[in-house]
Image: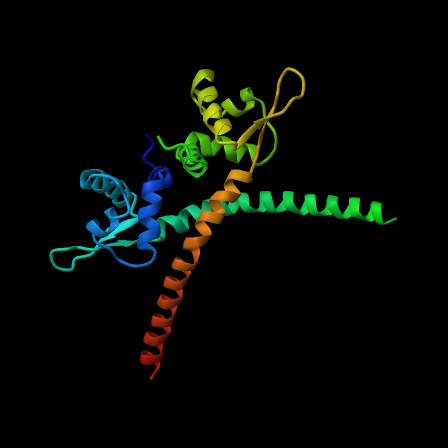
Length: 111
Length: 111
């Protein structure tokens, strides 16, 4: 597996359980037990998913007392957004062309 | 491996060679030979990467004659962008708070 930071981020996100954990953390900090609740999975399986997210820097561990809540770190998502930005103009240009073409068709049917 | 469409897209993007192929196709159609050129890899390895991109719907094959150029389909990237949009407000809010805090510090040093 590739280990450049963007590949690590994308690999971490390529799983619905891990995206579910991020969605939960987007609403606020949570303990491992709270994160595991919606899933019919062993705590070991959830911990493994969390490790992948932590390795990618998407999830951080708080230092508070024993229960060490996890929190979301959006920085790697911002990097992904910057990468995606290069392609945004591509699909926007395609949508513009499609809109232009539809207007052209409409103009002809109006005539 | 998970097979929901977004996981398939993210998995396909989690490799620098595959992202390189997409970047090349963002500039226009290309044959497999042209796509392979920058890489010190066998054609079999490049074809395997292309298959992953095609399975994710990120790359399409043209129907033109023998050489069947590949082209980029940005639709799965737009889906990823929509998913990422939910988190965009999160990091924007953090940047706003940081900016607010820096202004507050500056205000104090100006006084």
